Structures are given as structure tokens and as C-alpha cells.
Length: 379
Ligand code: COS
View 1: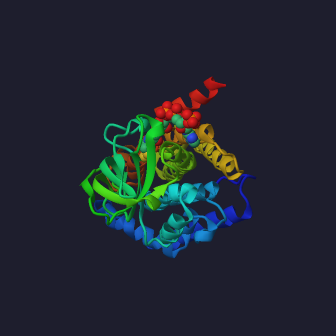
View 2: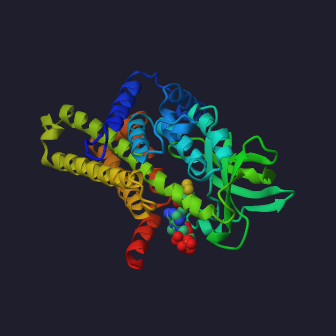
View 3: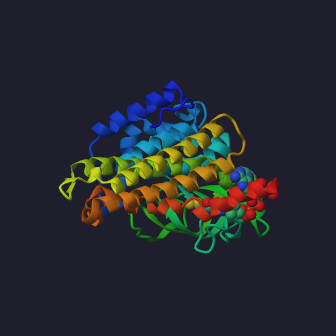
């Protein structure tokens, strides 16, 4: 954790407490069974009280409002230890995020305490096979019927598909484009809602496509107003994109620490690898990438926590730079480890795989660049 004036004493205590807890908690790592491992992390994180960071105070949360710096500190610490621990935490935040920020009091009461207690596993069902970056093109439909809605469509690359209890589903209720979308809280047990098929990735986590066939939801399950779905999705991503950057920094910091230890002990040409100037250049570049990424992440988080309505540009910069930088850091770590770096079971081999998806999900690097440039060019 960088010691910056934008943290208060609660942040410092939270981060130090999570570190101590992670040092003690039994490892729950089994890449071959990501679903079971993720569930185990949700349970453990709930028991430790850490999921309380994912909901506002009146629903059992740590602070009065969602605090983005706390979410980022959590993800940085968790990613340092385990990609699945970070994933389990992040999805409770992202799955509950639309409800925490835009849901009715009734939806908040129903879901948020359960999310904090780990009894409800959340999911954010936005992407489709033909609408990932271009959210405004999504085709899942929600039509009005009998005082509620009936949802039909298919969602793709949905994290927690198959193990979630709650899906926040974005569907078209009106015109073409972004203004025709609405958001709904869909109970996983609803008739017609099922995981279509699992999707396997290079760093395993529970992921799949989600089918919605005539899924009935009441009006009360709508989050926000009809037609507000796109804005809700984007505003929630404004919060969570910084946290993706924070997770990237966690992976990168671990890769840096592993590399520093390695180069001091590995002998090459009769001396430690660390004595070679090319190694020193690599370490210096890695450390600077980590700190630069962290500064952008915590700047964006602090800006949101200070009450700024939109931090779209700051969050995009944080996510883009931190995930790209972390990719470079993990790649350099593999290079410093040589043959060991590409050997299954080595930590840097795992980090190299873990960090890759972060440049894609919640808005690919190219989307973040578009978002940043649009804002600058519009003024
Ligand atoms: N917060 C609040 N409102 C926002 C917003 C934000 N961050 N971003 C956009 N909006 C609003 C705009 O203000 C606009 O409303 P008005 O017309 O009333 O002003 C409306 O939403 C439409 O915005 P825009 O014209 O920018 O929409 P586009 O379809 O052009 O958006 C991008 C294009 C690429 C920026 C957008 O679709 C995007 O971010 N895509 C990536 C999505 C993503 O992260 N996918 C991964 C899935 S999650 S794993």
C-alpha cells in the first residue's frame, strides 16, 4: 500500500487488518475447481467481515457510503494473495453495486445485507456475444406484461454464472441504442434463468453464458427508471473500473516482490542476477509502473469518494494504465525467472495468466482510451 495523504486512519487500519487476516487464513486455492474455491472465498471473506466493504453502512457496511478507496485497498491486497479471492470480493461489489447506487429501499433491504454476509452471491449481466464494448447494441429484451416484465435473451462472459444467487440483468425496454435499456434484479432461482454453458479461461474463475427464457420479474425488481440502464451500467463501472486497476496493482506488486527476492538469490555468470545492470533496469521499470498505476487508481478512487458525480475520465485512466502496466510487470517477472517463469506452479506463471483478462473486462483498454479522448475533445 502506498502511504498517501488521501487515505485516512480507517483506510490504513483496514488495509493492515486485511493483510494480517490473509497471512493467517487457510489457503483455498484450487484452479481446477474455481466454483468451489470462489464459494469458499466468499464464505471466508464474509466471516472475516471484509465483504462489509461492498455495501453501505445502513445495510451492514463498513462506512456510510460505498468507499472506493476501501474497495481498491481490498482488491490490491486480495489480488496480491489470490486471483480467486480478489474475484470473489470484486463480484460481491459489482453484483450489488447497481442496487447499492440506484436500487429502491426495498431492493437494498432484500439484497445488500445478504451480499455482505456472503449468503447472496452477485453477478453483473451486461455483456452479450455481440455487445461487449458496444453496450448500447445489446438485444436482451424485457417486455411489459401483467404489471411486471418478461425477459428473454442471452448474456455472455458472465462472471459467477452458475453460482450466483442474484443477476443484475441489463435489457432493452425501449428504443434502439443506449437510451432504451433498463436494469433488473433477477433471482437466479427464477423460472427460465439458467447458465447456458461454462466458459473456460486462462486464469480459471466461474464464468459462463446466461440464458433468460421468459423470465418474469415484478416492477419492484427494476433498478432505477425505465431507460436508465445504460447510465446505471456506466456509473457503476465508473466506481468499479478503478478497483480493476487496484487488482492489477496487487498482481504487479506480487510479481515485483517475487522478482526482487529471486534476483538476489539466483546466481548468473558467477554473481547474483541482481548485480547485472539489465536486471536493475527491469526492477526499476517494474517498481515505477506499480507506483504510477497505484497513484492513478487512488486518485480516481479519492475523487469519487470526495463526492464528484462523474469520475469517468479518472477511472478510465486508472484502469487503462494500471492494467497495461501490470501486464508489463508480470511479463518482466516471467522473463527474470527464465525457464521457471513459464513453469506451471510458479507464482509468476500464475500471475502472468491472472493479469491478462483485466485489460479486457469492464471495458477493454481501447474503450478506456476512447472514453478519455472523448472527454478531452468534447471540451
Ligand atoms: N455515468 C453516467 N452517465 C453516463 C456515463 C457515465 N459514466 N457514460 C455515459 N453516460 C451517459 C451519457 O451522458 C449519455 O447520456 P445523455 O445523452 O443524456 O447525455 C448516455 O449515457 C449515452 O452516452 P454515450 O453517448 O457516451 O454512449 P455510447 O454508446 O457512445 O458509449 C462507450 C460508448 C464505448 C463509451 C460505452 O458503450 C462503454 O463504456 N462501453 C464499454 C462497456 C464495458 O465496459 N463493457 C464491458 C462489460 S462489463 S464486464
